[in-house]
Image (cartoon, rainbow over all chains, first blue to last red; front, side, top):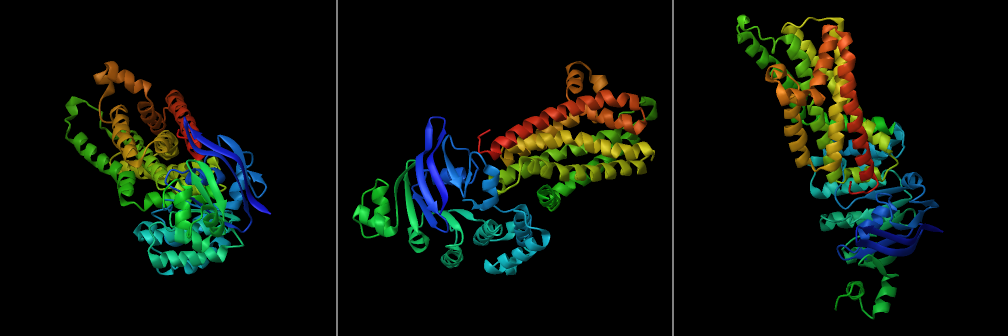
Amino acid sequence: MSAITITNLTKTYGGFTAVDNLNLTIEQGELFALLGLNGAGKTTTIKMLSCLTKPTEGNAVLLGDSVKERPQSVKEKISISPQETAVASNLSVIENLELMAGVSGQDRNDAKKNAEEMVIRFGLNSVRKKRAKQLSGGMQRRLSIAMALISDPEILFLDEPTLGLDVLARRELWTSIRALKGKVTIVLTTHYLEEVEALSDRIGIMVSGKLAAVGTVVELTEQTGTNNLEDAFVILSGGVV
Amino acid sequence: MRTILFAKRNTKEILRDPLNLFFGLGFPLILLVLLSIINASIPPEVNNPMFSIENLAPGLAMFGTAFMALFTGMLVSKDRTSSFLMRLFASPMTSLDFILGYTIPMLVISLVQACITLLASCFIGLELTVNLLLAIPVTALTSLLFVGFGLLFGSLMNDKAVGGVCGALLTNIAGWLSGVFLPIDLIGGAFKKAAEILPFYHSVQTIQAVLSGNFNKLLPHLMIVLSYTIVIFVLAIIFFKRKMSGGKA
């Protein structure tokens, strides 16, 4: 069953078309990686799917609810970890997590219990009482992702989740993301192609707002006659290998 | 439930900043003491009641609430630019949750601030009456004007610009054109006209009317303040909702 069905999705800003007539279906439990050069339209697509910006044309249906007609119902099922670290700077780690749990509708006891689980799962226990602004960039990023997951979303949007993380933290996050595969539908944007190879079921490559290609790593390399994803990506993005 | 959670978060964000505590609660007290000292040094034969405690207390109660614009504006702006609001915009929170969540903490802080300023005025000679207790919620009500300014500018500008507009410009305009620091009647002309057109002078007059028990003077001034408040809030809600739906406002 499909989790996300995108039909002719378009976003224009004045005369500039950021996303151009996008058509795509993402299955439930699938981890779909959206790739593209800077300005290709990945973040705008994620913003439309998470009801943060209205499509100019077209529609997207998430688990039966349209982003245009029932955005409130869509918001009950999704969570987003934005590109920039999005934490409340003067709240502690545990307070940030409890806030997001409460906002998603969990009662006080559940929010506390889930916050405790998250600090353990994301290696934040030693800094649980520290204010978010006192954490390192990597720790803030971990907290930001834990805040996206505490609401137990059915669809999760991860916009460049490992940006600024060191190698170990990145690998730890990959493990956490792998553990969600099959249970949560994940749409991931990233510039790290090894991350895409390690995690994703399918890949969509966007070029100038259009979806240039969709497929698995094997399908994309076969389509371009290349040996690896990076070469396939370069060719599909209009570059030369 | 979501409104209360968000309001609690906003209260913590503001009160955990020592600068906010100083400007919110301490600064009006410092001005109260300084201006009272100036008043004591004015010879009685000059007959200048400008800084008498009956004028000073309502004036400084109003001036203190001007900082609510800075607190609200900075918070909204920082939340926007740090992507924290983006995360919350993608949650089931409604625009009403956001507006009330930002407003309620400011109302509570205004109440506490008015309590401190007006009760401290009693130590300098202001009579402690039932009217003074009534003036506390009335001061908090007039503070909504500044909360609205903060929501509006915070929705439109980055935190540096909000600091300039709400911190420097608005507090100065509110101070100079409220009649707290300058004798508006004595200056007259365009200055007096501007003070009468803008809401700040009327906020002070509203609080003063309650403090002095001249309730027949209350309504005309309060109506002007509330009219401005409603217009500013409507504009703030329009621009905030536009930001929520991804517009460039």
